[in-house]
Length: 61
Image 1 (cartoon, rainbow, N blue to C red):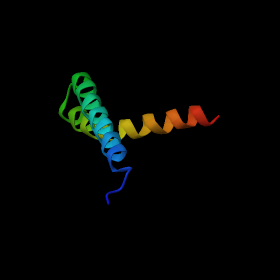
Image 2 (cartoon, rainbow, N blue to C red):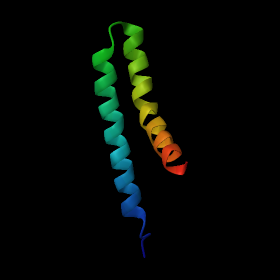
Image 3 (cartoon, one colour):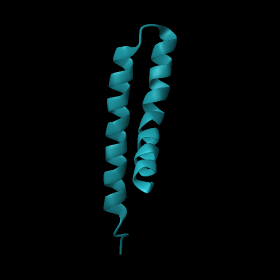
C-alpha cells in the first residue's frame, strides 16, 4: 500500500515549484546587469521559503 500523504506532498512540491518560477520571472525582470541576473536566480530559489516562513510566523503569533 502507498503512503496516503504522497499526493499532498507532490501537490505542495508543485506549488513550491510554481513559486520558484514566479519569483524568477519577477526578479529577472528587475535585473539590469550580469550580477543582478545571477542574484535573481538565487533569490528565485530561496524567496518561496522565506514567504512560507513569514506566513507561518504571522499565523503563529
